Amino acid sequence: MYKVLYIAGDGRSGSTLLNIALGNHDQVLAMGELCNVHRFVLGQENWCSCGLPVSDCDFWQSVEQRLLCRNSTGTSGLQQRFESNRAALLWPWWHYRRQAESFEYRSRLREVLKAVADVSRASLIVDASKLPGRAMALSLMPDVEFYLVHLVRDARALVWSRSKSWKQNLSQGIEADVPARSTSLVCANWCKANLLTTWVRRRISKHRSIRLRYEDFATNPVDSLRRIGQLVQLDFTAVAERLQAGVPLEKGHTGSGNRMRMQEVKLEPDFGWTQNIPQRTEAITWALTGQIMRRYGYQRAVGVAG
Image (cartoon, rainbow, N blue to C red):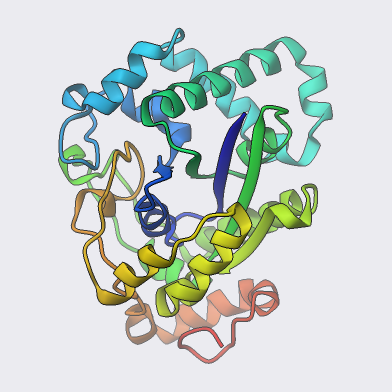
């Protein structure tokens, strides 16, 4: 039985910070975007958050030795079919229609979980892949004790963040070129990711998931980690104290995720967008996402969530 805490929601919502923070508990293995283990990590020229190339990292080399299937192309193809938004909406019909492929997909997913669990000996694996389809798949695997954190961030913060572009730089944690995105596209993806995550939450036990706003975690990590601790039956008090004190966190062996994993990581609330986002962009973003944001407790006034 594998105990998994899955962080779901949209990108740029603080999942890397939350993932690393949770990994500072001695019983927790924080894996970052585990969905990318074949695409960006194993057999690739990527860097681990420990500061070493994956090819020189003892943890990832031990994981790779335990995997029978190292076919990144085949695994990526299966993930595209079974971790898609369509798969999340149409489960279980989507899997019944493709039973042979579904069995192979879940076998490879289980193999990765077993490998990282065997190497780390951790009692809880954190997967910050965020994909709703992957969350649905994990929640229905009989040998996975599944928990979910729906991490939400103000859509205006994401619009501001994604207005910038980045060039690939593996040693700095940028796994591919990241183009700037339009306000309308970011808003559409934000709505889709959060509504689909809500859909998944409704299909699992209400005692196995919580919704957490980035703004609450950034300003009150003690209460946020207490809620997560109650969810997974672990005490994160010591981790919360480190966050509040501004102590740099141990980054573990996150192989894929935001570039933050390659930098010094400590709690530094990021609300710079409230001062920098153009007024017109803010107004358009609220018009496109405000109805959903109100459900999550956000207010029209630009500032930290109320």
